[in-house]
Image (cartoon, rainbow, N blue to C red; front, side):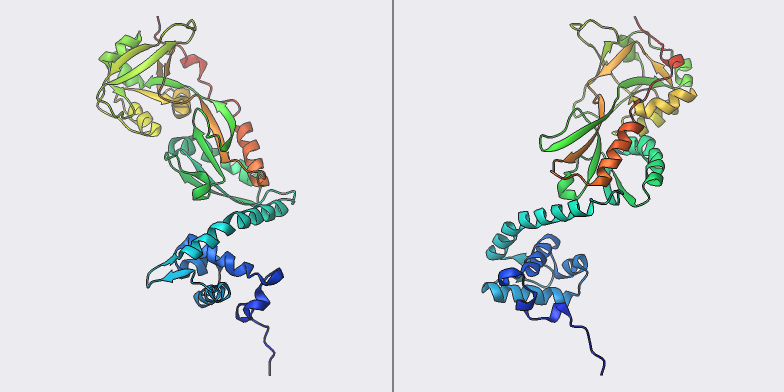
Length: 336
C-alpha cells in the first residue's frame, strides 16, 4: 500500500487552528468569501476546491456556534455575525499582509506586479514609450497599465500607483511631482493658411476652436500674457467650434486634420509641434483654467512602499524631469 500525504484541508479543525485553538485560516477564508461574493470565486482566489471552501466555512460556523453565511443558489451573503467577524478581522489581516510584503521587499531587487492607472492620452503618448527602458532594467517587475481618464479610487480598485494630470492629491495619499506642464493653442499650417493666424486673444472668437465639452452652453477660454504683471487679469474669450472631445489626443488629431485651433496640454502637442505638422498659435499668451500645471505620481499613504513602486517612481521622475519643452523655432507667434 502506498502511503498518502495527509491533506491539510481534511484535517480536523482543531489541528488546523492557530495558537490557542483559534481557526485563523478559516477566518481568512471567510474574509475572502465576503470580498468575492461566491464560493466559486473565493475558491479560485484561494486556489482551492469549492468543496474545501465550503467545508472550511461550515467548520468555522460550527466552532463559532452561529451562522456566518446565508447561502443561495447564486451568491452568498454574510449574516450579522459574519459581517461583524469580517470587519473585526480585516485590519489584522491587512497588517499581516503589509508585514509580509515588507519581508518580501527585503530582497534588493525590485520584483512583482505593479498595477498602474494613467490618463489615456498621456499614457499612449508619453508613458508607454518610456516603459521598455524601465522594464529592461528591472526584469523581475511586471506592469499592468489601466488607461482611463476616470479618477479611480486606488486602494479600492487595487492600484499601486496613479499618474495624474492634477493640481494635487487627496490628504490620504502621497504625491511625487514628475514635471510641470502647460496648455498651448495649436493649429495646422493648412488651417492657418485658409483662415489666417490670430494676432490677439479676441481674434479667437472668429475661428473654429476645438475644445473640451463643458456642461454649460457658453464656452470661454481664458488667456494671460506670458510676461504679465501679477495683478493683470486674464483675457476671456467666448469661442465656438464644430468639434469637441474629452480627450486631448482626439483634439490634437482634429487639429492635424485642419478642423481648427485646439487648446492642448503640451505633452499632447509636443511631437506635432516638433515635426511642424502643428504650429503654435498666440505663443505670447498662456491659456489657463483648463488643465492642471503638473504631472503627479500618486499612491495611498502607507508606512511601507514596495521596492518596485519606489524604483518606478524614481525612474518616472528622471524620465520626465525635463517636462515637454516646446521647440524654440515654433514658440513665437501672435501676441500684442
